[in-house]
Length: 161
Image (cartoon, rainbow, N blue to C red; front, side, top):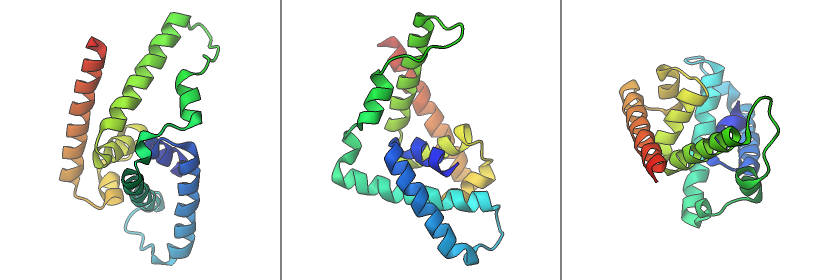
């Protein structure tokens, strides 16, 4: 769950693996501070989000966000995997939709992207997201609303283009 969250937030598998190791090292070192106010899973999510935010800030300073890893390039432009009844046209349409959605997610501010990933991909409740991000439920709701609105607009524009 931590690797998948990091991959969704950072977009780089190697960085996600590194981050997950860091997260569990922090969990190991600070487990005695866990008070049980939330579930252990939510507490770990909070650590993972904070670590991802720190890496994201570091990347922005180093302009790393503009680089594309070889794995990402192959995933985006590689060969199709053979599927059951999927036609090549359908597979291409699905791949294009996934690429548009990924680009739209990448354009979201980090806080909005984090909220939408935790809610829509990881399935956390508003309360769990609020705890993981260290913000109020109202803030979570507003970030999700803005993120969904931005995603709708970006996907609509990409469809028209």
